[in-house]
Length: 334
Ligand SMILES: Cc1cc2nc3c(=O)[nH]c(=O)nc-3n(C[C@H](O)[C@H](O)[C@H](O)COP(=O)(O)OP(=O)(O)OC[C@H]3O[C@@H](n4cnc5c(N)ncnc54)[C@H](O)[C@@H]3O)c2cc1C
Image (cartoon, rainbow, N blue to C red; front, side, top):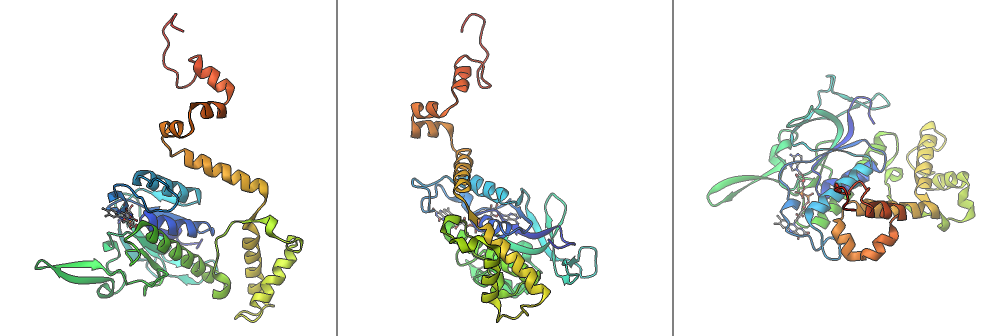
């Protein structure tokens, strides 16, 4: 993270677009805060039935909780507050951004309704219904479009203001939503993921990487897929050298060596062994189960299956009326 800014990235909006962007950014080690409050398109869906992974659909309250929990698990801070403005930080003021190499980095001051202002190197807007807080940051005429409706003039954030990867004419400002992908939840999430990946690549370039090396694929892979030769770290370094020998940075430079180390670390950390794969599967089920209605779990699995899965002692304690959920027992009624 930059020495000066509070956060590498502030995401405004914790819907499908914002949570996807935040997770991709945080998973590469960026320090991310998600501000989330205010008008939500997702909250207006009666039941979401076309989002992959939910055979009978999902209520949007549960989906919102799951998305938020995933962002937090990825390392994001989720702040329940409405962003009122995003402004450029003063170039010479105490809020100016300076990156780790001492270069001046342009940043932003994000001012929420209730909490203290937060500085960030990058801001991702992910608010389908809102863009007002960006007013004045760039060219308002380009950012907002005007149209007439029923004799009245309205202004809306221009869905085509940002490129497909979220980049905008304002350095460091990205827009995941509103966009031409924001009319369906899954396409909004896809757009958010694309923007999160762009932010990761741009942050790496700030840190001395060059574009061809900076693009990241966020995969988790089985180490059983690797031949023995890849057990050796030097093999990874050779691979990196072969990929980038003709790139824009001198392969004998300290910068090349530093980026190679980081790239090799990142590539190797994507692999997990069978035990870790199993542990992550179990953690995934537990995290999901925490959001399910217990009665639905009993219905789906049946009482016998659930009792079988429970610790015998816990069942006996509960049956005896001594468990934490046991109600008061009157004398002589056991
Ligand atoms: C009635 C209705 C039904 C729909 N049904 C479906 C459907 O069945 N299937 C489908 O795929 N899509 C459906 N959609 C569309 C779906 O809701 C959107 O595609 C999706 O929610 C867009 O995601 P988003 O992240 O861009 O925006 P949003 O879902 O709007 O998320 C934005 C988030 O940002 C927060 N926020 C807003 N302003 C600020 C601010 N200033 N500061 C901080 N936080 C802020 C909001 O509280 C919200 O949590 C429906 C939409 C509506 C209106």
